[in-house]
Every structure is written in structure tokens, then in C-alpha cells.
Length: 327
Length: 98
Image (cartoon, rainbow over all chains, first blue to last red; front, side, top):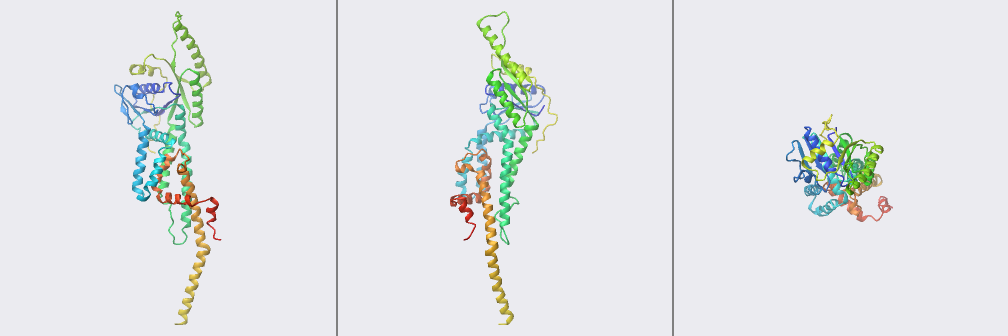
């Protein structure tokens, strides 16, 4: 089993429950496990009945289990401050305001939030050497797919920028005919250094996602959820990431045979519909069903979580070759 | 003044004219053109980094913003060139002296 495990799926299917249950299972098997929530609507705190923050925190009452909730807003703020500090160190007072405006604007763009989220979770991967397993509870399908598509896209982008920069510097050097001083020099160019650093960061992320990560999709036995799961599996496959298995959540319990009240008839019909969807999931998907979990009347917390963990058929063995953390 | 001195003075004048002519005919236009080309590439680099300066949202501005502190001279020159420039044709035309 890989070191990093992602749970994804449509909104409200129970990703948080599944990832928490799986983390509990790993922790019970003796692995040091960290659960990371990347969903802006965090609910990991609620599952563990404990306020979580942006740093890993030991979960009370459970050995070997830590949890954290990523806060992209804080990361955006931090990035903004960091960039401004570098600005103050580098740029003359006359130009600071002009560039400052540009930096502020860049942190307001629609992509900033996603980029920050991405940065954070790669950071978590990078600094996870204390943990045997890291479980990511992701945001609903669309956002996550875009997020996981980022490394490849950004690598290409950064590469093109780097080539442009190299060409212009090269020309500036060539323009320095005779004893002229070239306007820019290739050696020690801070821009090229930054771009290279960024590229390594994205390469690391891409490598970890492709080689050391397992993906599971959580699905409910209803039409919409099944369809979205199909799209998500295809979307991940397009990015070279394969889904390891499907965890079916919220199955309706069937009534006893001798019952024939209104409630029993309702349940019987509901179970029949769900069976049809389960059939579809079994036959039309390449991935195996790793869990079939019945609806609980109460919130899945505490002992319930251990119970659900028992029903998850996902192995917990530590990764055969843990990824090299240095990047 | 000896004959040798007069020859030397004459040669110095010829050398100065020669160097000036060479600079004006070859060196100057050459480096000016190369530098302008380098500036053009730098402009596309800057535009690729900061399209939001022109109201085009870019998903990577967040990452390129961290380059800004190191792009002081480029940024100013870029903005100036953007104001000066009427069209691409005009920019390319600047490289020729009619």
C-alpha cells in the first residue's frame, strides 16, 4: 500500500467519514497515521470531536493518529507577506508601490486559492517523514481533479517561462559587443533560480501523486453519485492516476421479511433500487468495491468509527518502498 | 614637427574615422537590434507572467508574483515600453534608420 492515500468523490457522500475510518484502521494496525482535510468546508474536527488546526495534532483517545485541516486562506496570506518582504529587501522605494499593487492583485486572482491549497498539501507530503501513512480527505470531485491536474500543467508552464528568460538573457549577452557590459547575465540570475526551484517542486508533486499515492472514490448507491464517480475515475485516468477502489457508503438496511408496514415497503423499494446501482458499480467499473457500508442512524463518531473501519476492506500494510522525502 | 609625427597624427585621424564608421555602420545597429529583440522576448516573458496587469486572469499569477521582487528593472522598463509602443510594426520599425 502506498504512503499517501486520497479519498475523493461527490459532495456529501461521506468522504470525511471514510478517510477518518481508514485512518483509524491504519492507526489501530500500528501505523503512525495523519489525516489531512483539504476540503474548505472542514468536517474532520466534527468527526473527532476536537478542534483541529493547520498543524498536525494528536487525536485524543487514539494512539498513533494525528489530524489537521489545511487552511488555504492562511497560506495565501503567508505567501503574500513572504513576497512583500522580499520586495522590501530588493526593490527601491520609488518602485515598491507599483509592484506592490501587482502582487496584491496576483493574490486576488481565482487561481490563488487553489495554488495555495496545492502548495500546502505538497508541503504536508514533503514534511511527512514522521508518518507511515498520510490520508487526504479531499474536496468534492471537481476541485480535486483540477488540483491534481496542476503539477503537469504548471511544470510545462514554468518550463516555457524559463526558456523565454534564457533566450532573452542570451541575446542581452550577445548584444554586449566589444567592451560593453551586458544588461543581464545568465550566471546567478535570480529569476532562473526561482523558476528552477518551482519546477522541482512541481516535479516532486507529480512524482508523489503518480508513484506513491493510492486513490479511492467514495460513492453512494444513487444515480447522480454513480455518474459523477464514472467521470471522476475517467478524469483521474486522463491524468495518469488510477483509482484503486470504490467505497460504497450509505446503503439502506433492508427490513425483516415478516414486516409489511409502510416503512418496510419503503425500505424494500429503496434497497431494490440501490441493488441495481450496486450492480452497475460491480459490472461497469474496473475498480473493485472495497467497502459496502450501511447508513448509520447516528453520526459516525467514536466507537462507530472503529466499527466502520472494520468494514473497510483496504489493506493497511506500510509502503514497501517509502518515497524519498528529499526533493 | 618631424615627418614621423605628421604621419602619426594623420593615422590617428584615419583610425578615429575608421572606428567611428565601423561603429556606426556595423556595431551600433547590430547590438541595438539584438538588444531590441531581447527586449521583445522579455516583454513576452513579462506578459506571460503578469497578464492580470492587463485584466486577463491567470491561474499562475500566484506563482509568478514571487518573481516580482527580482524583476525591478525589467518591470519598470516593461511598463515604459508598453506605454510607448503604439504597435508591433512601430516597434520593429524603430530598429531601422531611414
